[in-house]
Structure formats: structure tokens, C-alpha cells
Length: 341
Ligand SMILES: [Zn+2]
Image (cartoon, rainbow, N blue to C red; front, side, top):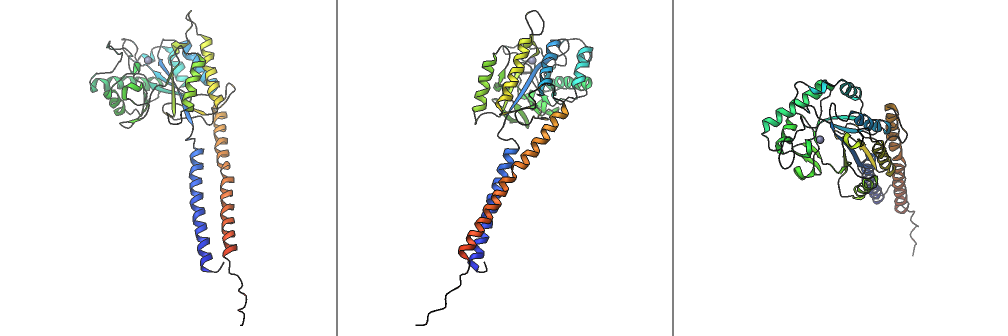
């Protein structure tokens, strides 16, 4: 291997190997970080004192049993009475405080009064001056923080309807995420003025499980489409005709979550993205604890890291084989002594 051409060949081989190795390494990292995955966010609007409390708890219990997160849109001030209304209904207050530190639940702000101003297209904020919108959103945000000790970072305008001033005011108040209808900014998902926007993709309401699954299949199979499916429901969607909780609809939500997990192609997250499940969800059985979920996270991380090792080993072997091959053909051969004529 002492000759100059052989050294050049070996050097070229090493260079090619390094380039190949780093490309594969970057790709492997991309796959491990889940960039090819799709995300599902559940958005539970109209969480407010004195409204559909039994339904709220029943639906949240599904999220606890399945260990699947949800973003709750809280209405801070639903009627005209004075003071912080979130403090005035003790069962609601105690319940919300009991789940405030559970990472499954994001506390988002859903307007202030959720009263429409009676325009053709209902909205609490649309068309109001910036200063009014800012003050109103701030009052609601402060009420949520005072009641639950949480500073919301996601803003959801009531009726999925706001304007540029709503977004500007929310941003000025520290909100980082904003969820509304596509028509507000013609954005399904992306950033506007530095705030992340995720539009509603699927409305639970009176849909059948079959139609939910078919819409979700389209989302999963559209490789050029959005990454995050925002599924909107309200506690009122789970009310029965007699005013009791409609257990069939609650079961349908659980079945839909099972279906999503069964696809093996989605991760569940919240609008604030502070916690995302690994793999296709966390647990198919009910009642998985937080520590169980975190151990799943850790083991997934580990196996992901080990999974890349054989890949690197193969490239090492290829590099060595390549060097060996060129060394073999380029090695200096013993020249036969010149024949004397
Ligand atoms: Zn609402």
C-alpha cells in the first residue's frame, strides 16, 4: 500500500465512506425523531363552569384511561355576573384544579364570554378594535391563571372566528398557538406573525365512527397534506336526550382512539406540543399511569438508538471492504527481472 496511486485510492474511499455515513446518519436521525409521523390533537371546546359537567368528566376519563392528551378550550366568563367565575363553581373549580398538573390536559383559553356580537357570522372578537380585544383576552387569561395556576399559551377564538387583531392581541399577551377555522387566515397549519396556527380538521358533533375513520384515512394517506389532524368536540356532543351522559357517544370516542392507535401511524399531542406520545399512542389497556407512559418513552428512545447501530456497522464494513479491494488491485507487484535479450 506504499505506492502513491494506492494511497490516493484509499483516501478517496475514506472520503466517500464518510459522506455516505453522514448522509445515512442524518436520515436515521430524521426517522427516529418521528418527522414522518402524523399527529392527532383533540380539542375540547366550551369547558366552562356549570355547563355539561358530567359530560366533561366522562370524556376526560376516556383520555385518562387511554393515556391520550387533550387541549381544553376554557371559557372564563360565560355570563354577566361579576368577579372571576371560574372560582365561583366549587365542583368545577376543584375538578379542574385536580387535573391542572396532569400532562394529559392542556388548559387553553377559548375567548372570554363566548357571546357572539350578533353579526351574520358569529364571533366574540371579529371587527373589534385592537385595544378592546387585548383587554378582553387579558381578563380571561388572568382569570384562568388565578383559578388554576396555569398560564395558557393556546388561544381559540369562539365560533372559530377572529381577525388579525385577535391574533395580534393574543401574541402580545404571550400566546404561542392559535386554533381556528381555515377561513380566518387561509392557513391549515403554519405560522403567522410568529404564532403557530392549527386549523380544525374534523368536527366530532354527530359524525359516525365510520365517517370519522374515513376522513382520518384520507389525512393519513395524503403525504403532501397537513401533519396534524385537529379533532374538535364539545362536552355537549356527549349529552343524551334525557340530559344524562350519552354513554354510546363516549364509547365512540374511545373506539375512535382505539382505531387511531391501531393504525400505528399517529402520535397524540396537544396544541402547545408540551407532550407527545411515542409510537402509535401509549397504552391499549386502560389506566396506564404517568410513570408507565414515561418508561415506554424511555424504552422507545433506547431501542431507536440501538436500531441505528447495525446500519453504522454495515457502513463501516463496506468502507473497509472498499479499502481492502482497492488495496488488493493497486498493491505494488513484484516485477519479473528484465529478460536479457
Ligand atoms: Zn365554543
